[in-house]
Image (cartoon, rainbow, N blue to C red; front, side, top):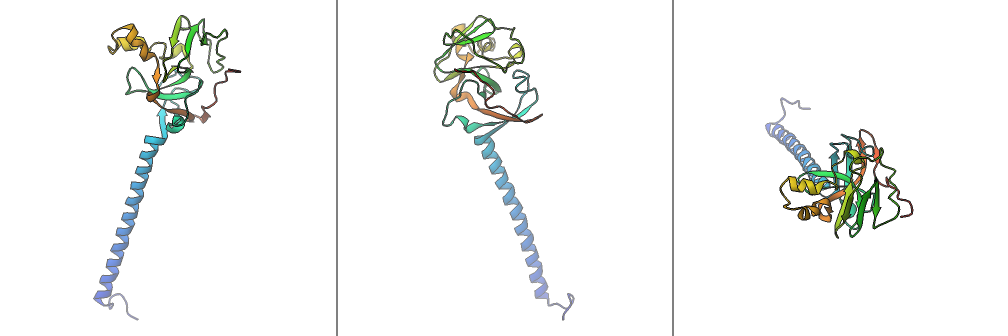
Length: 219
């Protein structure tokens, strides 16, 4: 039996070539796997999920500051947002920013804010909002909105510390993108095409489901 030193030169060369081929195949396999992972992540984040970090306390205590959450982009492909849904959307005054709020007013409805209560379409009784963290005392009276078709009126759960639909018309005027109060009114609402998805759950700093967090009784 021959040892490695006496092995014919052609056999050694063949073995070396086979080893190099195996290494190339292994490298190619890793590159292919890496490309597949990148494509899957891109498709998932572009078309399926939203991975977001909440920068403020406007949705406390439902969602806490710095919580991380997952939203589904496809939630509204075949359905419309419901009252009480928590949505991620492009901020109407600056669409480069993503906001998260709760849907309060639906297309075609009227929303009146009076004495810390919300009245839909002239209802005699306000919405039952068990998700509010405390008594609503700031900017809680004197607002009336007519929600356009294909638009939604949204508010933060932490009403005493939330830049939401109550103030966006003023923000639009301050930003110089609306020339009059009448023009600015359209910025009070989230257009359907500005909605990025529905918030589903937080996974940091704790796990919490964000669906069915509102119960409006017999509405």
